[in-house]
Image (spheres, one colour):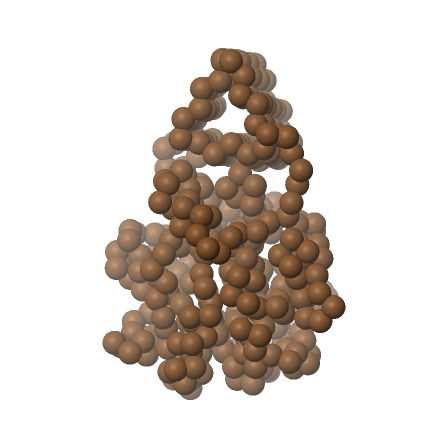
Amino acid sequence: MKDVMGIINLQEDNKLIRELTDRRAVESMPFAGRYRLIDFTLSSMVNSGILNVGVMLPDKPRSVLDHLRSGKDWDLARRHDGLFYLPSPSEEDSIRKGDLKNFYHNLDFFEHSSQKYVLLTSGSFVYNVDFSQMLRFHQNTSADITMVYYTAKEEQPGRNVVLETAENGLVTDLAEKPAIYDDSKVAMNVYLIEKRIFVELVRYTYEHGGQDLLMDGIIRRANEYNIYACEHDGYVAHVDSTAAYYKANMDLLQPEVWEELFMGNNSIYTKGKDEVPVQYKETAKVKNSLIANGCVIRGEVENSILFRGVTVGKGVKIKNSIIMQKCDIQDDSLVENVICDKNVVISKEKWLKGANNYPLIITKNVVI
């Protein structure tokens, strides 16, 4: 995979998850107690042997920069290649919407790299993928563009690209749909393209008025390229809405999902933080939950995920909830079907309850 450069495109539409992304990019959303969403794509690249990774920064890059920093935790702080940040164009250059302008204004990064292929991904997917298998498939089929898809097991809303393929993997139809249904083949926003073709695609599409790389560069010009797709049969979650974020976190409470993502041969890496172990006091009761280091538990926690440094008071009951870093849930409170962002304080004897399929959201630094 030394011939492949990885690109993580962080230009995501956050309209359906705006409550949690007001001050951060979608890809830097806290996830699974100690990770960020971008960790899954970045770790998959590193585990596949990709040593040159460019991050296409969003309009609000601070949270991404703070998390990734030099890339040391992913072994990307290197003298040659390593981790690179590709900034969005200045305001006077950003009249056109879409992500295509970002690729166009950073074409020199692609042209000056020594790699032959470009692996283009999104940072809002949760998976653990070996991209080296994708490269072999791409070379064996002599494809211009290779995609990765998964087969949907249930109906899902949101912006999704659905495709149809022949038996050999040749893509025969490709379209964006507002919802997907059982057994649909859904693209994972992973594209492997020879660098020469990628540069031509970006330059031609942008200079002819295109705005979105997927819609204007790939879907509308699909008949000009030899496009193949290979299937990923493992766990996949696309976090593009609040409901999807909540469901993906709750999925981790299933042992088989957790084992596939975190207990296999390929690890998921994140920024290291030294925290003391969890303190379970005499009155603590915890069932089917993920509890991160630094937490102090005196109450009851069931089917929930607690991030680092959360304090749970005596008599508290937390169920089916996500409690982010350094929240303080004080004595005799009830929290059910709730997402608490960082540094939230829920004072004594407060009862908070959301709907089963759509949680109540408490934004960052709020005191209730």
